[in-house]
Length: 201
Image 1 (cartoon, helix red, strand yellow):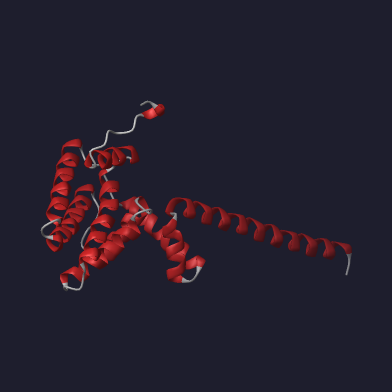
Image 2 (image 1 turned 30 degrees about the horizontal axis):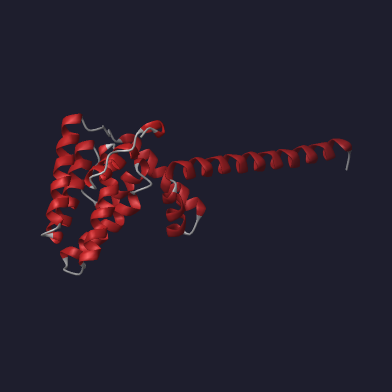
């Protein structure tokens, strides 16, 4: 084997190693981006598929579909109207928890439709929502399961209470409420003064 042949072989080996390293770096970067974007939804999809490649392909497919949707924020008037409707649904829970959960499910769907999400199929709906609201989409799935059990008269009052709590998580996100706004509303509902910024009393 002459020196030229050896050099060619070495060059090919080096090229293969470089390509493998680049591929590994690209895959790692893609994984980090998806983990950052989807948070807990990344891990849930991993567990569901049992395969990193399949999970990441699924999440990337969701992103591409979401890019084709024209999702818009609610204008202030609609946001206030839906907030009032939600407060009414919560008030109804005291006397009619089953009806309130059905109302919450319908209101969530209505807000999603208003913002531009397709709402015909729940699985696709939750998949689309997971791109923009990955931190609360599992709450939505749990609430929906409890809502379905409610329709079949299999949900306890505690189940219904939890369903309302889970629905509220997504509802707040869909309305674009900040954490500060949520804390202020929670304090107001308890009759407390909202906390001041900067440690003021």
